[in-house]
Image (cartoon, rainbow over all chains, first blue to last red; front, side, top):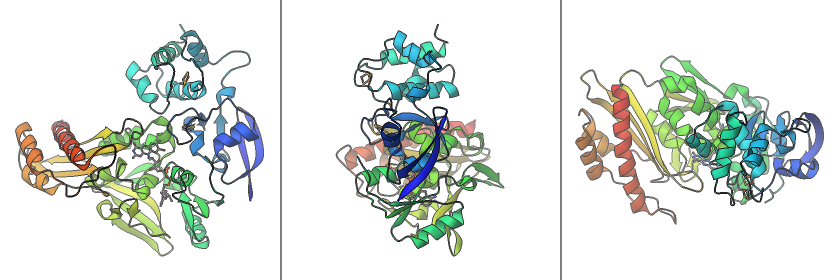
Length: 155
Length: 288
Ligand SMILES: Cc1cc2nc3c(=O)[nH]c(=O)nc-3n(C[C@H](O)[C@H](O)[C@H](O)COP(=O)(O)OP(=O)(O)OC[C@H]3O[C@@H](n4cnc5c(N)ncnc54)[C@H](O)[C@@H]3O)c2cc1C
Ligand code: FES
Ligand code: FES
């Protein structure tokens, strides 16, 4: 049986019918074609599927689309303003905080959520906040530097 | 990884959640979904219907009621970790919630779901036992109260009946002269507790330990309390050497849990180390 859900995704209200067992990440990628959100492990361990639900970072592989009904969801596609990258995206670019880029959308969503709660995190706090995000390429060093740069307003 | 089909109903009130549970054979409640959905993906749970209680605002939040705090079952770990009310009146629960997994999981996982799931590697069960918490379990017949220590009965097994809902958790206020601490040896990949030590110490007017409560995650299928250590240290001034001697000689667990990550013997060794450290930290916090 389909369930009608209404979700505000990246500032746009969408109404769709979904199956109860559709995961939020599949809804975003397949129904809305927002393929920026990646799927890595599907077991809530790698963080590549991180999006914001009502402004907080969550793993969209461990959430049903029906659970998102009535919420506001932000994905990596919703981060830029016009042609301007989000300061965190810009900082990842400048610090080379990515190699293959697979983990990056999740990293951006997780780290920019961190800065909403803690505008000037220490290196330890950044690493702690990234506990749920795995990167197999970079060794995290430049990711941490990118978050520090974004926290300092990109300077 | 795909889920098998199931029906989905969102409850508008705790009463409606119970009605829906009652009407759907094989249904399960879903709160944050962070224990249940992983189980369903592995087909270890295959509910016919999910009753979503995630939106029941009346089951969320922390408030002070006399000498205890009432914590709604749907309060998520992130909210517990940042609660000013908990920081003041029951800091050990905030400390433990902050150590659950990672920020994303803490934004979705709830206290009620954590204890209903009753994973021996979870962080919050031992903390509720050590603080002397009581749970409100609601069924169509009304609400009954169960002590946390009686709630956990086995591996992923609790005293919760199929037609019951956890609505709230009551933890006594830890007042002046008390100190608490939760430490864990966490699994490096999943973040779950290989062993977690929850300690509450209450000092009397003479500065000696008037009451001590210890509880451990990860050692057995349910939280383990270690009464011989408690007995040896109660009434003492909790000197470092006394703590070391009591824990080293008296902390033991019959048939401890063991798995491919950590043998039973290793877990007991971890428990000794973390118990000694947590006792000293709790003591120092109690002294203020
Ligand atoms: C990657 C990962 C790492 C984790 N690491 C840790 C960790 O380090 N420490 C830790 O403690 N936990 C950990 N967890 C578990 C996490 O804390 C879960 O969120 C929590 O255990 C379950 O809460 P939930 O609201 O998501 O429950 P759900 O998954 O929604 O439900 C779990 C079970 O509880 C039942 N239930 C839920 N709410 C109620 C209620 N109010 N009344 C009656 N029954 C109810 C459901 O029917 C279901 O059987 C981890 C989880 C993940 C995915
Ligand atoms: S795909 Fe969701 S955490 Fe890995
Ligand atoms: S950049 Fe390749 S996984 Fe992180």
